[in-house]
Length: 62
Image (cartoon, rainbow, N blue to C red):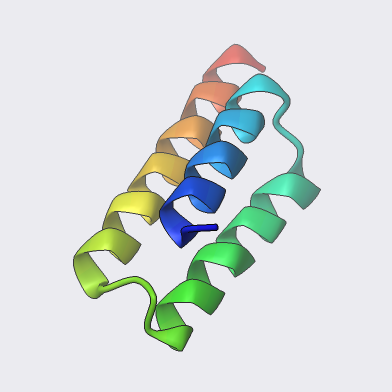
């Protein structure tokens, strides 16, 4: 499965049910794909920003 699909699905799940553990797993998934070379730097930044926005929205709700 494409890393983009995996990361996109994980972000969608994080939006539905945010937990710190899921956030850390998702960040590790993104970093692992970046270090493996399956994501370039622009994609890495894009996904990190999406995760950051999810976390910010959850902080505002809490």
